[in-house]
Length: 437
Image 1 (cartoon, helix red, strand yellow):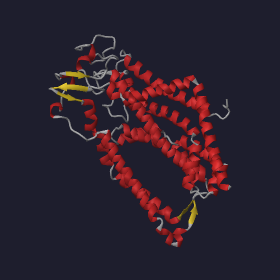
Image 2: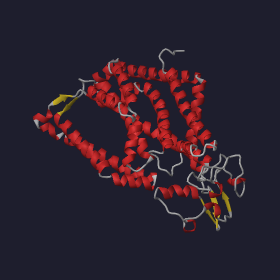
Image 3: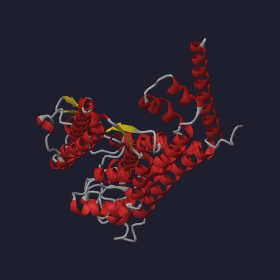
């Protein structure tokens, strides 16, 4: 009889959860502005993902000297270190080759291309020195001859990449720390002395061997390619995870020592709350400026710093939700059934407290994009060769007559930040418990 009751409770909980999210989806769809903003974000994501196929100096497909090549796809394999260029295609000017036939992307330029014939900020409506309309700079060029439209397209990738990656880091940290603080409070978390000592010592060792001793390897990997950096970063994470796993495995042995086996109360809520207050007091912009003053400029450093400093709002939201959720009946039922604390937190508590986090993430992405644009505008944190919306906007200061360098990047920044804020406001309204109908 009790088993049937437990099954019925689980079914009722699942039905109520589906009903909640169905109601959220229904309320969100009523906000036409938010729905349009969400569709626009999908369009931006598509442009960011396929930026290389929209704007690139390498052909999509070409027949050269009787052989068929896919240079653009080949470049991905080369960047990842999985292949090398064919002998006939090493160190070539792609637009000057005599092809049997060729298909170029819509915009046959990448941001780093310099068109010396159209330097000195050529207007999109002015006369351009080009072989044919196929090679026209549709949004003009900057002082050095970079194609503005290509920079705008690839700048979309950088802007969204910064927003999504930095907020992914912030979400991971914020959800983890906020849920621990909210669920355990100051009196629920008890850890043996041995486990606590080992985790603290091994965590410091993990950071040193994972990032400290490999800092030069990671910085060199960033300069080579993103694929190389991702692989080296993955190795660092494996080192950290393996080190912490070792610490918790050895903690089992400490149970044999009575003094180390004693469990002590950890006031985790106070510790994390004070940590949040410390992080809030650190200005992100000045922290990035301080870091890049002693480190090589890198977009990855910018993303990591934004992520490491932008988790506080998410942590506060989920902590407040967990303080309510932990006293609800289904959590008490899970405790009564003997479920582990880990399962209760990650499978039952956190999924039912994520609603306000989605709002914070939407606004956080907009804030991260604006921060990156600000840094690019100031010429800080982003490599000089990277053409971003902020760097294009900054170029307009040197030539006030080049209106297109101010209008197009400025409009892109404004629209992107606005649509993310509109989605955040739409989620706020949809998740409002007063919106029942």
